[in-house]
Length: 209
Image (tube, rainbow, N blue to C red; front, side):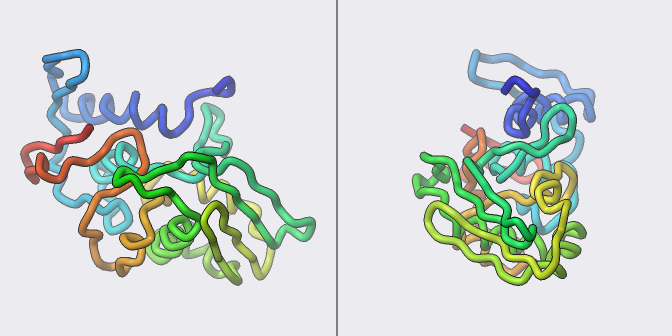
């Protein structure tokens, strides 16, 4: 994108660098498709909504995607969302997802997945909790979802694009319906990397495709 690096690009390019720099790791290039490094701390908790641990957040950026992303000037831009509109009274935000979005299990990303993910995020995140006091209704379908407010909330898009914990990552509805104070049991996202459960050894290694 001409305006700068998107969140997904940042996750791929800077995520691994953050891991390596924080631990003074030495990368071992064994092939053009393999990157090995030692993280600055053990990745033991995978659910990015359950904990504020930075190691989990960085892992979340690799597996999951977000509705909006910040550019180099920290302005929100479309990511999973393909288009959106705001009503004249600033109370209804309507979002349409980009075509072709799929989770790593092959299922399409739907508006109802976004709704469930946002509702879970709002319970745990401070920005989400503030936003929830202004929300009247959130509903979604297959390709779109909408947020109806009780009163204008000017920073709604900024909250959707936030990069610090907790990040509003989008999960399949079946996972996002997990209680916000319980950890999800699977890592299924639509981000740049696919989590490989069989290659995950807590405190030792994490495998992704």
